[in-house]
Length: 389
Ligand code: F3S
Image 1 (tube, rainbow, N blue to C red):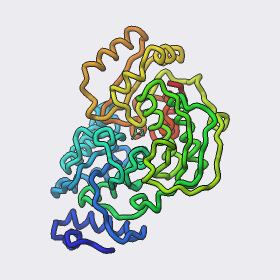
Image 2 (image 1 turned 90 degrees about the horizontal axis):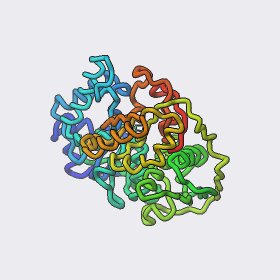
Image 3 (image 1 turned 90 degrees about the vertical axis):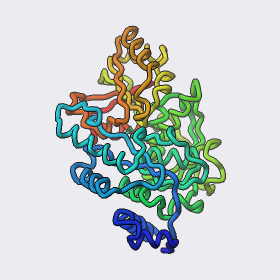
């Protein structure tokens, strides 16, 4: 692989042991994928932040890096942590270990206000900007909506890329690999988060390449429209390994190549059965994360009346870390409690799917989010059921 003079110096250890290790990993992965050079990146996003996922080995690795003075060289954000990061378990050891993971990441230079799966809300990528992001739902959003360029990295590779400010130039970084072929046409209106999610889960199952999607999104406002699209994309990335889709009229045209292939029409009947008689009185919102502003728009009286009818008595909402302080939200929480007898619990910086929900007494959870519907049972130990919101 061709390396610049600075990269050569990194490779030979002139910038220290950590940088040397990081560039050697990136070069190795790049060579395996046929990359001939590295490319500078301006934002890395790290996943693998929950103690339930990375365990003692992951914690030791991150602590080792931070103890040796490792420091990211570009803007770096991190995914949400488990509910242990909010002290929700009785196990002190678990809480301590999750806190150490967060502390190590911050010491390495991760934005302490991030801890979200929607890093594009903190810093919006620009067209053709090179990134190294982990977190499948964020990767597909960056490539599809902004026309940015990132592969679907593993958490560790994203961390290494953050340390050297570069990644290997292959895959989604090259225009020739951003080919949309299968054309998906929906024969119905996408008018709720649940329908948007089910569509995404379905598309992810049937396509083999980057899909070109022609869908009619019908939302009451721009916020709902964006949440629906976020959920379609996150769901595609859940049932496939795709890093990108093309949304007609949304994805910047200069950022993909169109190849005519077959057209697949999708009828509502082909999506999974929608079980709106959900067997849980707890609703999860925020997978991917929603902001508190979005929550306010989401929980209008019409939706709250519907939730009441479904028997929901508690809503847990996962939001980005930077969203933890808001006086407005206290008013919303109070209003919902008084008028609808529904408790709202806001969980900043956290993710339900990477938490042990069973240990917290949750046996079933209602949610409109495709990614949560897919993973909750196996990863969090709570049975998910679909609900219209
Ligand atoms: Fe985000 Fe966790 Fe869902 S990382 S997309 S809230 S599974």
